[in-house]
Image 1: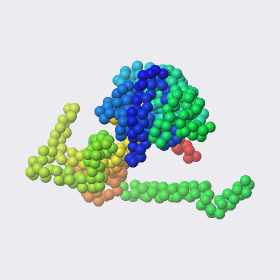
Image 2: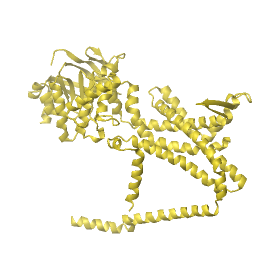
Image 3: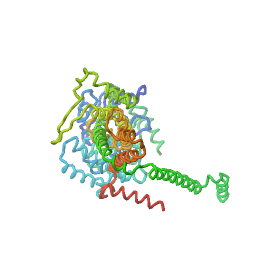
Image 4: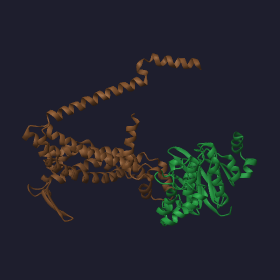
Length: 245
Length: 309
């Protein structure tokens, strides 16, 4: 983890109609940091993540990637999104393409990388996520865990600087969770900057550098993972941990 | 446990004979065989007593001419209505309220008025916007690949009418197909940095197309049958040929045989084409291994027959 911050949230406010879902959220994520965002459902974790690559609009405040404001009205969102990979709870693989084609689509369509080069890269990514022989399978022929690993490879193919993980193991059968978490662990070890919304406390404790506890649209506590799990400083943190044990 | 079991048995018997699956199945078979035999013997009786076979032969060339005309109209209108209808369907889902509302009005108008009315507007109405005899398409001539074609306003009017009408139905099918694509697909594509147009073209539309295929196929078969309305604008299509022969010979059944066969020939080819397209849009590795779609189709028919025994 370096000292340069790469993603910055400054006084971010977000409403869904009348509902105030993000209340004055400020946070800095350093390069190579793994920030695990936890909290009860409805606390705004996923919304915060989805605002980061502007899948949701914010109403005030600013979100910056490498000091460029992605939340600005005139921001080149398509270009900034290329630098932020995202993995979803429901995989969202493209069903009409094989695993390999899913991975190749971004690089060829968006970056204009030649087909051969993109295919080679896709094949090495498929190996990296442990799906060596599944490159030509269609998503419906893969298990949930395999699909999610393809989805991670698809995001990595764009060589992002930051990866967003939105409850990526929540839709998986319990016995498939491990294989996806292992891939994420490797990524973290490799120095990827990650924002991870999850309910997997074991993962948060082992892989997370920083824990962000959200409650009711606000950041209730944000501290290094080891300290947080040792002894949360806030009442909300203590309450949340005690409910897990 | 044994109690529940006997309870179930008594439920079945108290439900009477209709609760018995085998009975319902046999009843269904009996009814369908009866119906099938009734229709078949009626047709047989017609073929033996009503059809004049020498007339059947002598009118055949006239039906072939009409058939060629219908085929030309169907092919052109099909290609135009599916491609323009896809664009209209995209317009329906546009985030711009101007585009989406205008296309909604279009669809409402062409779905909401009879095709016959639309044909009359185009065939009778449009030429009268010029002084009598001045309408430029009143007679036309074009040359394509060495062949030259000439005609009057009937053929263009027919193609324009059928196309405009069926654009509306194809647009609705495409709109439904797009709506059925999960929002997560667009989000995943956009989060890779794809523009809205790229995401629509590479991710959403291929899936929307598959969703819409059955409805589009249905509509295109209706388009084939809608050509029968063209008899009212004096186009020499299949129904017009029938009417001529019937009024000259006072023999309806003989030409009706050809009418039936020619329409079925077109509609059944259309069905075949649609099921091939549907198969191609079935995304899994298996289909790529199969040698030909036709072979698969024949295979599945064979399977269906085998299952009956």
